[in-house]
Length: 394
Image 1 (tube, helix red, strand yellow):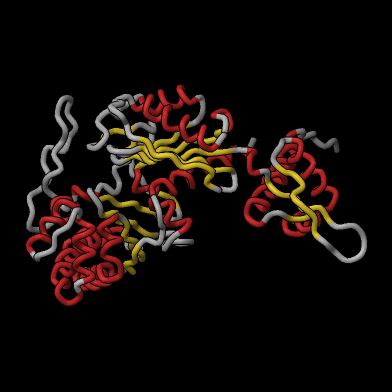
Image 2 (cartoon, one colour):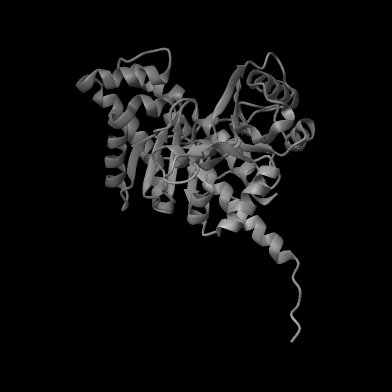
């Protein structure tokens, strides 16, 4: 019987072998040829051929030697750090922060710039990326991926910002314009979603497949991870918990974006636990500061005198957490943002108790463990995942 020739199979096997070696080297390298073969299941010949291809692509190089017993030392192979770079951006109303990272995830430059009156998002992002690349001494052409974190609703179908109260200049068509300007793939992602990505990679939700992240700062937002994947919803509005109807406050009204008018943010959970609401509440308890976070930190430091304020804030946040948990039952709730960070364990423990009293599930409530700028870290992680996938499949 004549066998049908399948010329695509050898190429597919090469791609699988290359990917396996690259993933291993990124996770555990540098490694010897023998170690790569042993850990991937490749024969010595196949491992040698794989490394030769990766060297030819400018992805792998000899990074040293491993001393052994008899015979010559074995060469150690590692991923070339400069083989690819990514950019992550945190775009806010006051500053744009850009980080450039190599393929290992090492940050080689971080630059913060003020918008300086630029209303055009394309010009703003272009200037921020170019300045960061210059600081890193990395050519723009070396960027494999760019991920931008912004407040607001990002449409998962088009990649555009559908609405952002803080960034009214971001609108339909910006995603395509940015990709065209930077001449590479660009991803815009909700900032709280990126914090959830950072938390699952580096923080309190490591290796947790089902959790929610509640961001409490100037505004309030929710990142939802189910089955290890971000849940954005059909229109990208999953997690807009500020609009959640809660007892004791008016419903949010006039929430639709209308040309010439910004939608109202009054009403709903937002009116109870935004930074402005927390600062006003703190003043009634005798705690004041430059920010809501300072007020909360002062209450925590005050011990018994500050407990009533922390209890009140926890009770308000528990309304939102309980509403989410009876629907999703995530098991883990991570609190992030400046107000959450200031409250720490004093706040999280009270929220956990309040939720357990009001609904049939008792999630674990913990504080975020991601330091620095979590939006930026999430953007870099997302950009790295995208760039590595492109390298693996190219």
